[in-house]
Length: 302
Image (cartoon, one colour):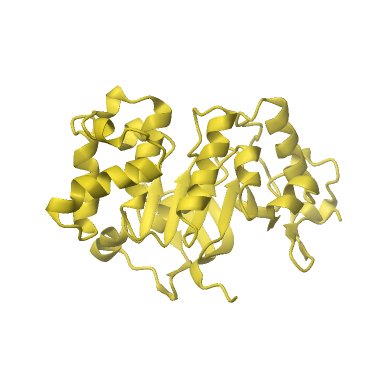
C-alpha cells in the first residue's frame, strides 16, 4: 500500500534576527500518514524550534530562511489560514496539560469549543465529549466534564489533551515531550493510546525519553540545530552510527532518562567535533553524509 505524504520540511534554516546566529541548519525530513517520527536531542538542539516553525509561532527574534514546508502536498500557509488549521488539521499535544488548559474553564467548555469547530451540533456535544474522554482513558467521563483543570492530576490533564486532539480531523499530530511527569507505565500507555487512536495521522514526537522514541517508527537525532543521524527506531537505538548518538543514548540511560545538557559551545562543521573520540581534522570544515538503504548519518569518522 502506498503511503500518502502528509508533511515535509526541506532545508529548514532558522537564525536570530539581530545577530544572525544560526539556530537550525539544513534540516530536512518528512512524515507520512500513519507514520511516527521522534526528534531526539538535548536542550538547544532545535527540536522545539522545528515544532514552532510548523505552527508559525516562532519567537519574534527568530527568522526562517530558505525553507520549504509542505502539508498534504501543498505549501504550508501562514497567518490566518494556518491558524484556522491549528487544532483541526494540525494538532498540538503539549508536555504539560495543566499549562495548556485554561484554568478558569471546565473541561466541558474546552471540549465543546473543539467539537463546535468540528461541526458537531450543540445538542450532541455532551455525548460526543463523553465519548472522546472515554477513548482517552476516563472510565467516568461525565464527572470529568464538570471538573476544572486544577482538579485533575498531571496524567489526567494529559489525557484531556488527547481527548481534545480527538475532537479534530488531525492529519499531523505534534507531541512535545508528551510523557513528562508520567511513570514508565504511563509513558507506555500514552504511546499506545496515541498510536491506537490516531492510526492515520502523521505523528511528530519530540522527546528525550528512549522508551518513547522506541515506540515510534523512525528517529531523527539533532545536535545544535543539525541533523546527525536518522533511521528506523530499532536501528538507531540498537546500532547508532554517529558518536554523538552513542553519547546521547548513554547519557540518557545513565541519568534515568532525564535530559542531560552536556553540550558546550562547539566549533567546527560537526557540532560534536570537540568531544568526539573519533574526530578527524576534516571535521573542522565539513560534515559528510553517509547512508545505506534506510539509514543516514553525518560523520567523517566512518
